[in-house]
Length: 276
Ligand SMILES: Nc1ncnc2c1ncn2[C@@H]1O[C@H](COP(=O)(O)OP(=O)(O)OP(=O)(O)O)[C@@H](O)[C@H]1O
Image 1 (cartoon, helix red, strand yellow):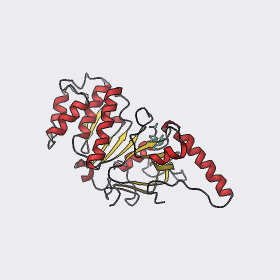
Image 2 (tube, rainbow, N blue to C red):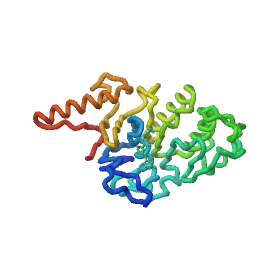
Image 3 (cartoon, rainbow, N blue to C red):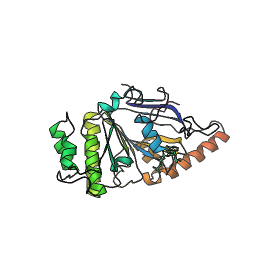
Image 4 (cartoon, rainbow, N blue to C red):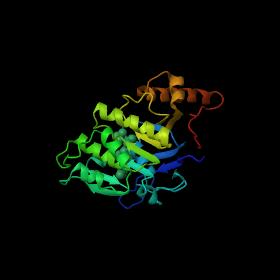
């Protein structure tokens, strides 16, 4: 079966004010390759500014790249807007606290509107799925969105983003405003979505609590370059380190790679269908 997410030699630079990449500027994302299959859950790790959001936005079709570099469900999200409008590809990112991005549209949520109106306003939704999400996220349908707390808004926004049974879900630090119980319920629900429906999820986060056994794969980015892309068991086997120390693992592998290069052949991080 073809991978659901394919990143192949992805290289990207943000355009300058003239709409073109600044001449001579090094690429922000450079030669990143990895792919994921249906049912896999990938944690996308990296320090601030490493390029995680940029990669997720490219995958979500928010920045244009050559279609050969990024394929989601075999298509380019930037060029094929039906991917997001159908709900097959869902992107939940940081700006969601103020705006709801659903099916490719941005809706401002500062106005006086109830959570119920927002959630039930989405047409073509399975009522059972909607009820389950409302329960899991512990949403009070009477919340007025302009008065709701950040965490309450975030719950409504996450609920709306998950109403359609996505095939690929991109999560960019969306659980930061959630309390421990809501976060744990959401992660359990998302795991179930992958195991039962074969959904693929990429989740960028700095908060590792409760994630030890959640991902199936780990991808680590530093300075826009892929450092590691491996199944979780491999990461655990190799390092006996927690996810928190993934950076140390990468440094150790780089050091060993450099030593090997000095000798015979250089070691290259091997991983989840790395095609580069
Ligand atoms: N629209 C933009 N134009 C130019 N540069 C940008 C733009 N957005 C982000 N950058 C730069 O790209 C780099 C990577 O940013 P990105 O948001 O992808 O990192 P990140 O890994 O998600 O970081 P964080 O963990 O802090 O969210 C940063 O140096 C940032 O300043």
